[in-house]
Image 1 (cartoon, rainbow, N blue to C red):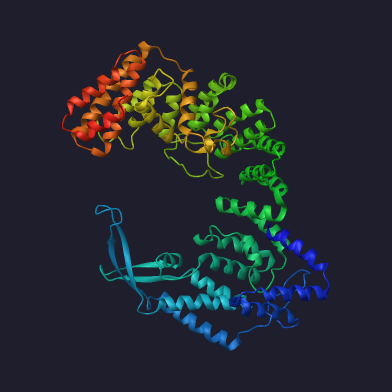
Image 2 (image 1 turned 90 degrees about the vertical axis):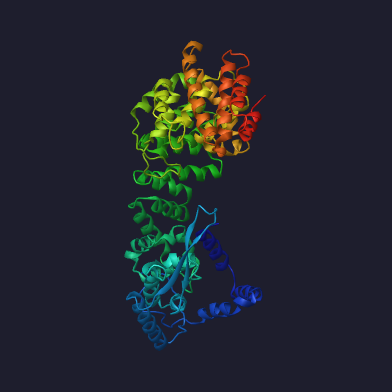
Length: 598
């Protein structure tokens, strides 16, 4: 239950209670307060005994009645403490106060892999200065002295403390987050962020609140903060929250980026619910297309699949086909369409998913259904030819603005899956040496070609390991990629216990039927593969790179299995025996080969 609904229901109950019932309720609450919070509770109920004591000079606009709270810290104490804090921070800024440090190496992953760490020396007690400032800002906030609290919080958040490196006669600076990370300050940054937001909400005029609060999210430790959390903070209830959320949503609608998108989604859900998400999505989809997906996910929670499909269809019509996020929406729409028994639109969504997010998994899905393959195979190949190659591979979550560009490696994968085997061979041949395959396409290309030329449907030991490695490279262990790749699998929950390797291989076999090659066409490629693998094995085993023995043993076994599937009797045994005989003194390699023998 979000805070808004909770308060509405609480107000409804309270408004229906008599004064005597309210007294009994508060007394019952008092009985259950833990000992360490009893002082806080007494102050809390005492606050409501004062009706006419001025809390601060800030004027609230609007008609809400505000309960005034008694200030507990004298003005003289505040002025003296502020002067002391400002003096100390001036000395820090000017470098008069600083940390000392000694650097040393930490060998956590063995002698060859080390990290640099620091031992800090705080002879000038900077830690106490900073902690006292934060605690005093907290006290000012609780004393309704928002101007003073905001000023101190700002200074603390922007602090840069010089560190003198005693080992190298050098220096560097630490900011607040770095000092917390290094263990120099025992500060809960999430609590600090919420206090800062609460304080600035109280201090800022209504017409400036939204923009000012949003500017605070530029600090890294605000990244996971939820604006709703400040509503239950502090001694004073926040006023004009309805007006604020309207201005907050309007402001976020004009911002771009993942932070703005997250905050906007949360604000709409808090203020307007799922229907509000759809309403705002229709207004702001050009900057925040993720609102359409968020709305679909909310309706999925209540199993309203008709509404999900309706929203998804609208989004697919409005959003640019070049947005990767549109591909995610297409998959979610396909799922909803299936659940309302609209298989025709579900299959169209499969193509829309590939059109906007051109991954290998989205492409192969099109080959799991004969009608879909016939309708969309040529269109998909045309789409691949149009894709922009960015040179950047990203496996992170899709951002709102991310375009459907692909990396060089992804382009080469898709070229293979459109039957461009000669090109794949040429790319592999660019790597002339048998070693140094890491980061180059040749390893993936050899794996793909071995599976392509394997003529049987049932995988054996070598090819099965190759298929597992390819499935992992293509992301087939990410559940959402597998949706609809096997009959009766309609959601991520359905496939959570399924084997991604198994689904990959069955889909691969269906794809292969659409790109057939004759045995005579295959044989020259297999001879070339045999030469490449032979050089690879000689380089790895001859150079005694023991950590790669299993990899090349797998290639040898897979090559033998491919040749047997094409009609060469006992090919696997011959390949394994040949390499066992060539390296009689390499027991570890011979043992790896033995693991793949039938």
